[in-house]
Image (cartoon, rainbow, N blue to C red; front, side, top):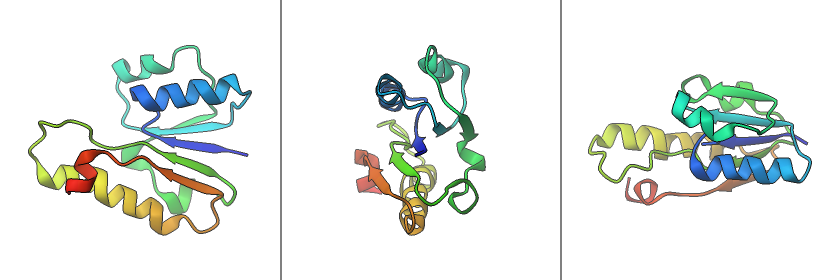
Length: 117
């Protein structure tokens, strides 16, 4: 069973990865925007793959049976670029939701900006 964690480099996502590792799971794909500072959140964790958020396409990267934990979103409360917020929070969530057929589980963790968008 493979886990796909969007937002896996963030604080919450990296702790979800640690929890999965503690349970013996290492077949974990992280989808996020790569930065060195965020990458440090995954020190001493074990994952099978990393996909940059800009390259992620559910039709190419997800497989039947995957468990998706969707935590990826713009979380800044001071970002005033509505188009960016809408693209990164609403549209990316909608793409996952539309593709969920065949996946074992899609868990969404919506942020306030997602709801306001």
